[in-house]
Image 1 (tube, one colour):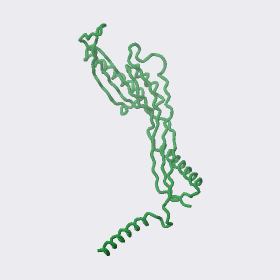
Image 2 (cartoon, rainbow, N blue to C red):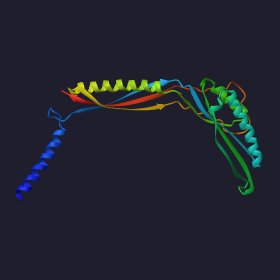
Image 3 (tube, rainbow, N blue to C red):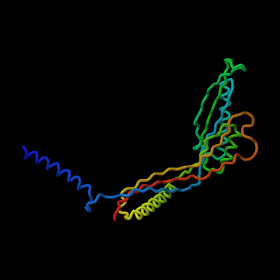
Image 4 (spheres, rainbow, N blue to C red):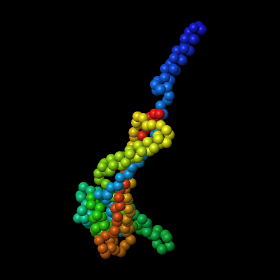
Length: 243
């Protein structure tokens, strides 16, 4: 009985020693590592711009309000196409009909309602320099709500690659500096991971329905600057250290 118990203890000890020796390098010391991160940015000039163009109409007859909206929306669509938007880059994204009660001067409901019709188109223009003229054309055609102007870059891969290269160089420089300061040397690179994000300029321009002149007369459209799009990459490296 005692011999069996002693054999069990020796067997467990042998397993534990084998597990420990597998996690310790031949030097007899645990492997030391250094984890560093680096970042890099690349700037790109936007080559497209996306906007939401809306038409809102109202009236006491829902059929007439919808008909009026259809007419104005068709005119706005034609204006966008003539301003350089491709048919493939023009899409209807919102349509709504709703009503609101009419109250008398004392605040009491009259039993009458006003009908509102909203129709929104989303357009992508592949030549941002023509944005001002396109907005003016849309407003002149009957648009009374323009918002969500967003500039972007069609092909981001070259700029992502540039940002990653800069991030890698930054991380390597940091690792070398930290290893030197600690009195050790960089060994094998054991892990690399990356991430990419983009921060694109998103200006805002809106013309709300308020009666009177819809689009204004003078000039060639509102001045809007596209700025630059920034693409940022992050790199995470893990090195083994040697002495």
